[in-house]
Image (cartoon, rainbow, N blue to C red; front, top):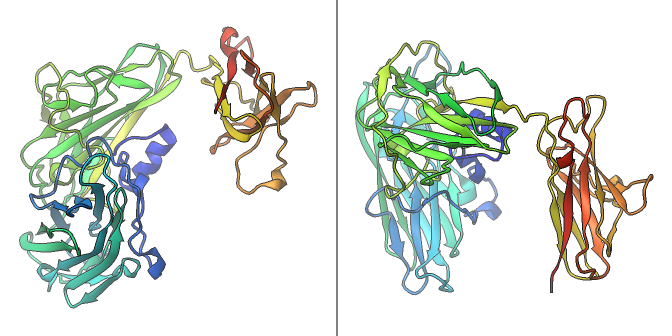
Length: 494
């Protein structure tokens, strides 16, 4: 979820990745590719983390302090590993990824901390013996395997940086392995100058297969500021119950969530865009539920399109980058509860069945075709050339069906456009070019997924200099033409 995406395309890209969210979220830190080159060892991911990402620790030993240097934290490792049973009659099922996320922090705010030196990770995987094969040991992180032991040499981790990787993979091996608890395996993190971190993961033979309802119709003609209702529904088509409860995570784009339910935490007391609701107790194999009340979202006043998305996670291993702390604001109403439903039509993700599932509902507002130009500011020093991202307008209709859309930018006085021919740069990002019909005006093509860029030079300071950006739309479709033009300002940096 993770959570949470910049736009609907990113949301569904993440959905295909995990389930999703699945939200959102973990795909933004994709550093788990198996390395084969020592140069990739201990990638120092400057992981920004999600909301209160470090507040929840997998176990009491999840933090180690390097005296006078940095704090090394285990931000994530699975607490429960569900090993699917071997089935000779179909493709070998996918086992979960055992992802490790370590990060070094300054021991004190503002401290100029040194690195945590010579970090080593050791895993005792004896619990898999006779049940699974260990393979794809991550050599890029210095990992080597000896029997059912994997050791990884990460070298140093600088303060503010980290290592996010999958040290090994497993494949179910023995047919007829009994369902249920099968012991545990341990991870130990040592370094030259920090206390040891230990983490234990329970091993369970069998796998939940989380699913979600997907037949939510796209809403049209939603009034800006109007309410929308979505009833999340999910199930478990696996052969094993989810132990320890499930968490429902709801996020919104171009809409806010009403804080209605007392057992849900929200990222803001008002104007929330993320809700986290925990449901205790197991999710049995074969069971399916929907919430007994709807999630209510209010479309933003400026919204043209948006969506409301939900995902279901195993609470014990839910998306740690989006997890809201216990102190987050709670809803003011009665708890949100679950009621049984027929989940036979619900679907999930085959590659990661036990982790999460999710779905969403898109919407369009009555302002869909009201094109509104977005103003921007050119920032730079006198005499400096700078690239400026030109924002695309809100609303549909500025991009013509018979060709690409265009924006017209009249530059503020004292600013000159630099022509950047396509052959002079690499990449797919288009640059604005001089308008052959009017001097001092730029034509900015779009819409392209990477965005459009304008290169300018700030020649001199002109107090109060003001330009404009204009997007074209047809008055017959977009009667409100007054917001098709917005200001372009200049900020002179020292």
